[in-house]
Length: 67
View: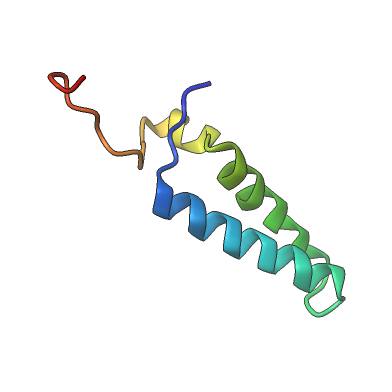
């Protein structure tokens, strides 16, 4: 599994996912809030299956000449 979620994208996923899960756990937003587990998990792991499906990546490109 190759990392395809970059730094800012990961941070946003973790914050939004954790927020949704917290609100769902407190009963503030209904059961649909548990969908926050998905962005939370992809942010923590650094891999998004949907990005792979569409050939996307938010990771910065590494230059070929850099060592």
